[in-house]
Amino acid sequence: MGSSSYDIVSLVETSGTPGELLFSIWEKLSPAFCTELVDEEKVILDAWNFDSTFGNGINDLLVNENYDVIANGFRAMRVLAVPRLLEFTEVMESIFGLFGINCASGDDLAKLEQLTSSQRERLEAGLASAELPFLNDFWHAGVLMFAAKDYLMKNLEAFKIRKKED
Image (cartoon, rainbow, N blue to C red; front, side):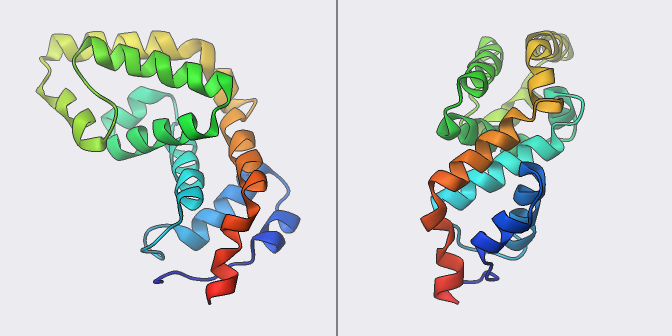
């Protein structure tokens, strides 16, 4: 495996917040350092990447053309299966769907570049309006970070593989 090792138990014990824990894991596993990830690691990295780049909302990700971050973040939220995250994902995907855009992959999301400027403005306005009820969940309640940490704790054995294999 082209990855660095880590001791998940030590990371859990030394991280004060879910965000600190996920950041520590991201440092160890980001694609620059790791070529193969187990599914559980992908979920954690995708959750971290989405949350840390969400900024002022979904339109920040679109402006910066972070299409893979959106698609992978939505996938991670579905895996985490927290009702509020599922609701957010469903709402966002339905808005994209109104414009014929599937959120299954970054390539699918990149098709929004084919929209007219008027369509793009309507899409962005729809997304901004639809995400408003969820912003506090991300920015203040940290629902994605807590859900990711809970998921990690439920799947701790999968994360211990890095220490065992190295």
